[in-house]
Image 1 (cartoon, helix red, strand yellow):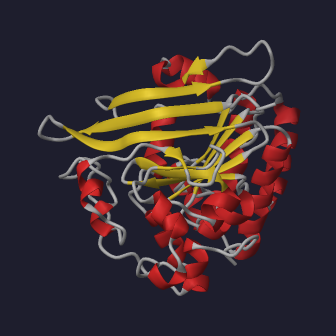
Image 2 (cartoon, rainbow, N blue to C red):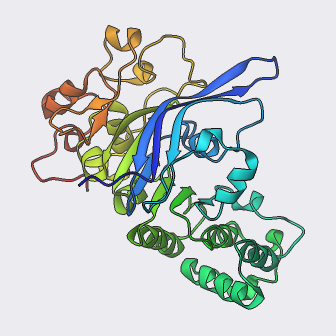
Image 3 (tube, rainbow, N blue to C red):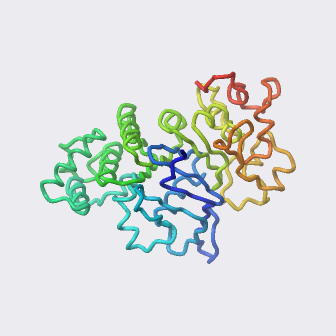
Length: 352
């Protein structure tokens, strides 16, 4: 039986206000879901809309921002009523943050108050979650242990800590409640390999305990190792989504294939061109058309819908007019810059 998602996002769009009074389109057609016990990795280049998506879900966009689409939180349990995240009042959002939804922020230095020690801020967070003084101390220390954060640093101020130390403390603060949904924005940024592995293991543990975990990352290796499913964003659009083994092992969108081709193990081939500066690109077709090696006239004229990928049973979806060609293309005719192991991997083969 299919599990009901904890979070369902459908056709999420967002416009940010400009100084001239107009609006700048930053998200268009972002769709995905996250089930309990599952890790979803949202991947893409800088500017793809990954962090903007989390910001919209958390209600942290500027006051004059325009948001459309649906984002529904389904708390686990038979008595949990669905919550429309896009229509919440600020008061209701505060009730969810830290309890229903945990947010591991990108740029931990801005998530902590500079004039107070990190220990006092973590203890205050625990008290706000309903713990007494003694209980709060235990909760703080347990949270620190999960991420390998040093207790002896609790008396320091944020400016006295390294970026990696700040990230560990911010991550610990975020997971002191009992959320049903964890939103992690580049949670391993600034961490060394061992600390990054500890953080990834904690996020996996959160999912194994039944929580839904959404991880925003530019690190495809992290997505490959940690995630059950992957959503690939480009210029504010979801261009491919599905089980991580399928999306990263048998991509059916040229952008996903090009991201994989840029990895060292696939030849370190950089993507040609530059991502668009705005979602509202000049033509109305595929946003990747100007950089795509499979481009045809239809790509510029018609925006492709997210649909089942060739050979899938519907769990792997892609927004590409040329998905069939990408699936069937032999090594001798593959697009320039995309390795044969990505376009047409051998049966049972992976990307490593």
